[in-house]
Length: 146
Image (cartoon, rainbow, N blue to C red; front, side, top):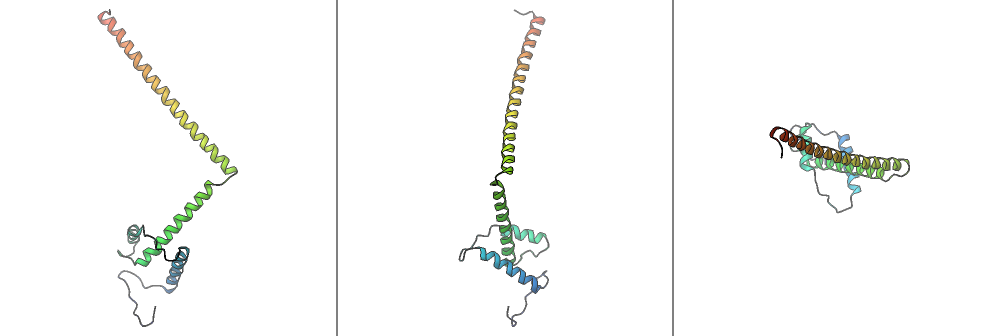
């Protein structure tokens, strides 16, 4: 920023702290350094982040640079968490044994659910047929069956 240019303050926003502005610029540069040159990333969360920023006390229309920086941070966080999850799923050894056992228990649980449902269906059918038999016997007793 040149010394001749006046500092423009946006309504509802405190004056910029030079140290924080430098930190933000460094963070933005670090995020841009990870992206290939000339590749412009599509902004996916602009409206949502703008609404969140407003909800947390920012102005209703924050600076596009602020939204871009925040979106870069969100995307970087999601990428890091996804990579960590991928690393956890590919671990071998003791964790792999636990994973295999958990899958085995889940399969057994599904088999038990199916078996219980089968028994319940058989019980319902048996109860229905026995009720029909009792009703027929009762009709025979009352009205003198054939």
